[in-house]
Image 1 (cartoon, helix red, strand yellow):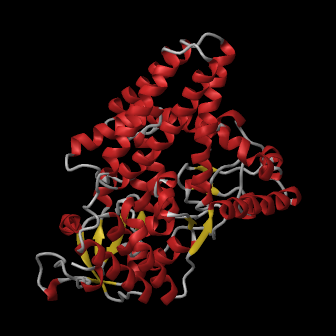
Image 2 (tube, one colour; image 1 turned 90 degrees about the vertical axis):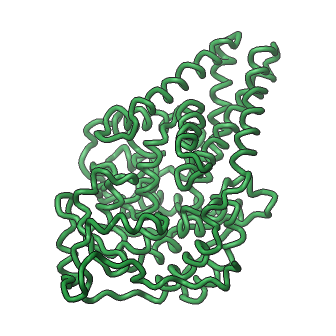
Image 3 (cartoon, one colour; image 1 turned 60 degrees about the horizontal axis):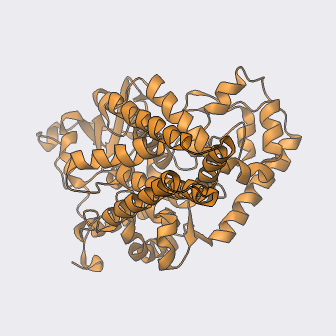
Length: 466
């Protein structure tokens, strides 16, 4: 079916519960907003109100996304992240219906577009991309092993280090895809791919990544909710971060002290060098998460995967003939992978930011305002791994990346219709915009007043998201 022929389902297509209309409790938005805590959590989806308190601990996407939207209408976020088959599971949590439920024109059009894509089967059509990428990674990894184990040339060894870094980048794209949608029709195989390409190959736990990334998507570019903007003491994209704000994700104060002020004041100069070593922070973050987080799905499988990385990678390094080659091998891999860390920041650092949780009735608007597309020709899509269509990805996170280029015109038209920003820049322009944002905050930091001294600099440095 053509996309333009599809129609949106009725907002109330699913009966609220096995009750007659006269028995349904009517609830005001004000009443629902009072139920916004972990021990009393209500949300609304298409006007139906659900008490999801007992589900909070079992939510596959983690507790933070639900807590972020607690007491609000969560329809747009729910529909973006869940297939229609999930909706009936909510029946057991039904408590009533909003008496003052309304839908903004932008949200109505977003839901209609989502339904069109779903009717066209785009969310289930993954294509051959994952298989091709996994095959390419296997070949490149074999080449890297050959260069280290069978070649005596220093050049071959450093080439292998760079190749490992490139494989880590491709693994990042695979992990990103697998965290948003199924790569195959077999759940066990999907899980195996996640563990092998993520935990085993790169040392980054998929559980840690999903925890952070789900929070980022729900609260895109919220300074106190989005972990992807919380980089103190090294970086700050806004002077609002100079106020020692509380991180909802990390559950700690983002202290802006003398150390933070020093680093942030020169962040436009240190940005690219730090990105070259950002992998270290992610490796530490994965270990800390697996050890300290109370609830981790299949914790021991995650730990085993990360442990496998810390076995094969040091062993491979140990086969190199000298210490300087070993250090150079690691640095080359880190610097190559640093390109991906730069890519992560380009999509959000220069976009609009705000404080507080997103509101259910402006979720669509927040996603478009907080993201930036990277303009590139089709033959460069492999380089960006889908992040070049960041606006489309944030609006339709379950959509396989090979469809982004096709759906982009629909998203642009929707944004134009409602007067919403649709940011897009070339790779070079996006870098300039990012450095300009960092420089502006750096100049403000030099004049800012610092807060209390940091209690533990080492822990804070390791515990920021790079």
